[in-house]
Image: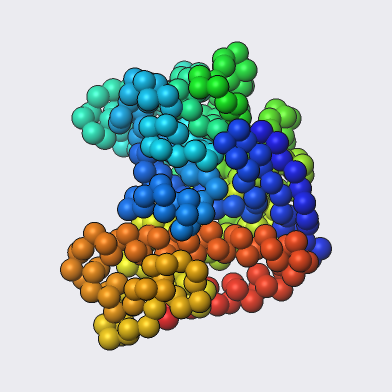
Length: 376
């Protein structure tokens, strides 16, 4: 993997760059749609490419490991071939499930034992096995195995956790460096900075992650319930330490406003289930603010979903029709809303990139932040 920086905003730490992988180029800042189990819910791969123009999508190691399973993925020739996607893929390591499945898992130095949410079967993820699984899935960018601490989290636990995450990272690197990719293209390992909302722990973790000298780095353990200002504070601390010349990925973030504010702090890559999950619940993100399409005010609004959008679905379907579909629980409603939200997120980061290159990002960001939170 290669990363080149093309422009930097003079009034903030925002940057525009290009990540080059064997499956194609990713212009940054970028948002990555989440395809948990080998599908971005409610969206065809053709739509992801042609309508949304997603440059990279995510797969979830834990979910893909359980279903369809590693045997199926290996027989298919990896996740790209299995799902019919020829652009880059990033997989998380299962570390987030260490956090989200807290009731059915047990953390030890060796790794994490958990019970499947599907059938209750018992499994052990070690740092080494997390690397092996992601090699088999075949992602272009694979994530180190870490513990994502909850919020709130007491200082002593957070401190103990980052040291274990760092020990696990060394094991991840050793395993990754001693194994080969399976499908004839290169793979890259990103370590993850942890440390909850404690500045000194975040600094310590960022210093350690930077010292590992991998091709890119991630920031984890944020957007787990902490106030936005705490998230921004931790992101700023970490971005000031992580190497300038390598891509920075903020995991699981977030709202359109979160994304713009974190771009201004020096983040290059984002992912979040928010645009897809909220779409299925009738929340649309637009250039003028947030629409709850279930509200009665849209029942007789026959204007396009977003008239100045270049997405086909935004132009040909009305707000009234989309509201009708959602109220009728028609699958097409979720599809249209998901297409809209993902297209908007990709439009937003593309605009951010163009504004950075033009030297206009900071003023534009400040204007957009005041608009995007409006409830329409």
